[in-house]
Length: 308
Image (tube, rainbow, N blue to C red; front, side, top):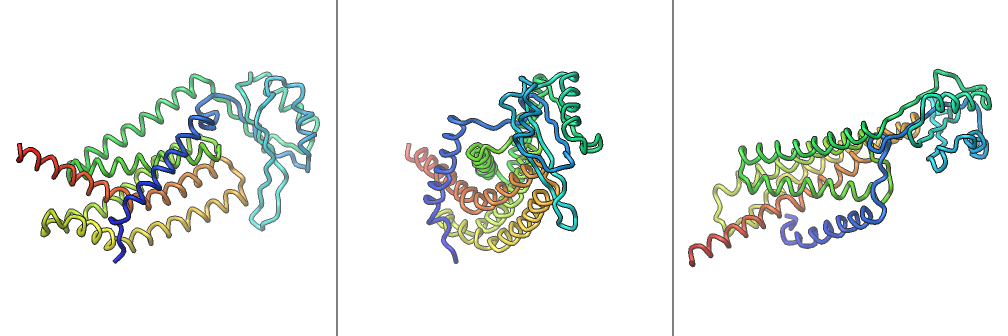
């Protein structure tokens, strides 16, 4: 039987290091927020021919408002695996419809192979971006409150507290990694975080349920052994479930990156992959040991009350 509880301090130190690194990155570099939250304009189109970044820069030169805008060349592949025509993504501040049309016409004049069917234009105002931010935070808050209420009703408050702490631990690590890598935070990222919430809590609750069943017939001084046994009893299930999920997600990441080239979908899948990895780790090494720590604190307080 693998000893998990005896190594919980090492797990706590690893988690603390990851969280602190993420918080440091957030304090120094912040998050790379997409236009969904900051407001701005995204233009994406297939140029229909091979071009260089110098040619793109020349086409953008008359548009002063796009100075410092993020410009990325992309190239997908068709179902046969052959490269498709090069595409371009421009992410910049909010542009008026007149200026957007002027930019599109400029590229059409320089690259005649570009067609209207390949054009994608998105523009989000600052007010809408602020509203999306508020709704995203509200969604996370509602999810946390609902989970606390359900787990408290179904189990007990200490189980709920340990589970939610582990979930927040997962979110902090994933957000911290996105800050370190400066990957874009957009609406699909928020959807991925909510998905990770549901996935992680399911894995954690299965272990918590096994702990609850096993402690019915054991003494309180045997809780360490009970928690360790419960984790080991669910270990194979947790690993197999996570590996199966990761195989699907890695396949999606390969397909989105190799064939489609959609940045939004790539961000979504990367967040899910990180969430599954961190969620599996926390359900085994963080959530259950935290519950045990809460039990120890509760027992210590009871002893002090009796002594008083």
